[in-house]
Image 1 (cartoon, one colour):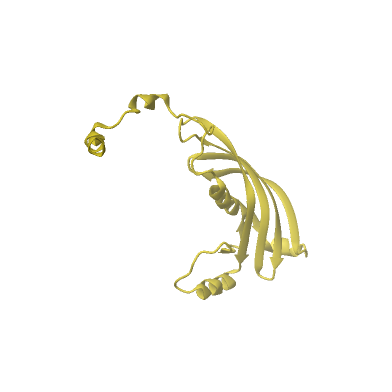
Image 2 (tube, rainbow, N blue to C red):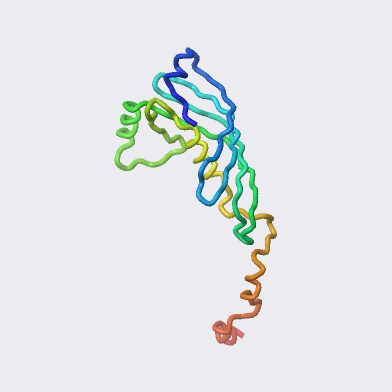
Length: 163
């Protein structure tokens, strides 16, 4: 979902508050059907600052047993957007050895800010790296035949030397 900055400026307000449902954010290997977001937009001269909260239910697979699992992900997001001129000045000011900071600045493209893309980035960062259906998931039963609680015979000679 994109918001046109010029339309927001015409309302002659500096602060706006929205609650919206984003449908079908695409993340590879994960299904995100709905994202509930509550955010506010602040217009400060040629800069747009977006702050808000999101709540999403994602469907993915357990890394141990490969069964489907639904996970709730929620958090806060922040976006700082500048006009083309200000954005290029910002990039030039960073220099050649620029470091990424938490206060990343994006460019306003075609007079619009893409809130879906912003929220998508925060969802990806807040998703669990190794989702599991339950903390004590044993994994696939087919892998049991490959597990061996004994000692690998290649290490036996070293154990004999130790004893």
